[in-house]
Image (cartoon, rainbow, N blue to C red):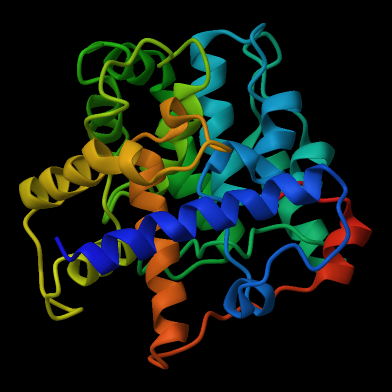
Length: 299
């Protein structure tokens, strides 16, 4: 690993989290001296601090839900991805059942009214299906999960030692959650903070490395940015970063919070940061302090 790159990577984690802490402590903007972090939007190193996830923990992944309800509602929430939709739709409960047609109609109504419906944080593709997105997401992606929710939940909870990786593999078998495994990974991360996967033993051993994380690893190891990396090598290289994290993480961060998810996600965001610094490209979103303050967002 390149020492300079490793220092820069952990420096990004330290400063980005310091920005978050300054915001929640209601310090005045700007919250950093770093010109790149001032100008462009980067998500938190720790996903649990994101505004939408904070809302989800308080209102959606409730301890009172059954395991099956938690699994399906996490799939539903992340497949749409906005607080506004979730507030209007409400949780799906076993005793009331789920009406896919009503969910489709709500999506279509919100879209027609130009209300925020599908998240802009990531893209849900139709995977080649020629139909409206509401139909694809509900009929092709979520109906199979709902119909097989009990068996799916049993399989997700069937391997505690490799709980996250096992759950990810099981969810990837469902259309809309497979491919590169991004959507499955979002749901698995949510379930880790519920009783479904709370006892998973691989929090510090496994993460699903997306394209951005792989580019970050290539930067760390001074390889061509587009060089392919075998999955086993991704895991080994992310674990190595986790092993040295305590040498770089500052006191304002609890080192126990730095897990494989933090490493994987931060590699992706740090890659965006490096693209700006090295004049290799720009993130698609600029940071707007005024909009942040108006939303009262915790990010």
